[in-house]
Image (tube, rainbow, N blue to C red):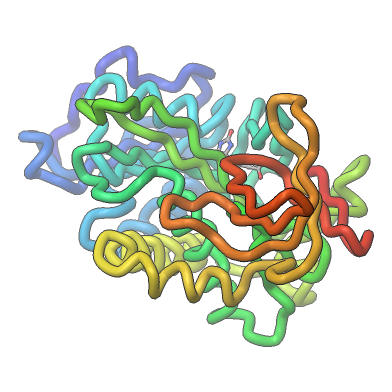
Length: 311
Ligand code: BTN
């Protein structure tokens, strides 16, 4: 297969060996459908397995695999800026500057977890981007619940995944989709702790992995492929019938019907109330002492003190 020339802007920022550039969609690129540049054997195997087992129609294709980047969200954004298509996936074995919500750091050990980002283009999205992030959280929940039915897995609004009181997965949506929704994109970055054994600092108390919860290692690519399949299904679902999705989501929402505190992102006052449910655009409805309030963003703390995750 002839090699595709990769524009310099798409070359890894970190300049490390270990990158696989695969484009599987000849509709989008009038070039060979697969290109491999310098890579490690292990990463090559991972990418081959991904290519062989991916079941989606469009989500997760084309894809790029790297050994080490600063943040997959940055790499996906750079790709989107030079025409990376809707659904494209950027995967890294290691992130040197992984980001979490609220400016936090997302720390993972190299080669044992899932860290990846998807390009979502507004012209392919018929629903509010807020609901897409909920769909992504729910897809991760559903994937894990199906594969690990005995674990106590829950969603914490908007899209953290908890096993018991500890967090195993988080989602960071970075969006340039403006009001006019023209030619804009969002980057959906997802982290899942799969085979990590130790966590440092506060994470020792608040984070967990599938290995720690089950006592054995898990196939990262199997999980990734299952998640993408579920996410594609959920995006289709919310494009048609939002209410059935919201009902399912609320059915598994940690703290539904209970008292919670929501710390606002912008330093404004915290809001305390009982979770009533989720609005059609993904906001939380809270019954407070002064009436029903709709909250767009924030960190949930359970008022019974059982959990004050600040990951
Ligand atoms: C959170 O819960 O705070 C969100 C965590 C999101 C982490 C993922 S890992 C892949 C992608 N790249 C990043 O830098 N962050 C997201």
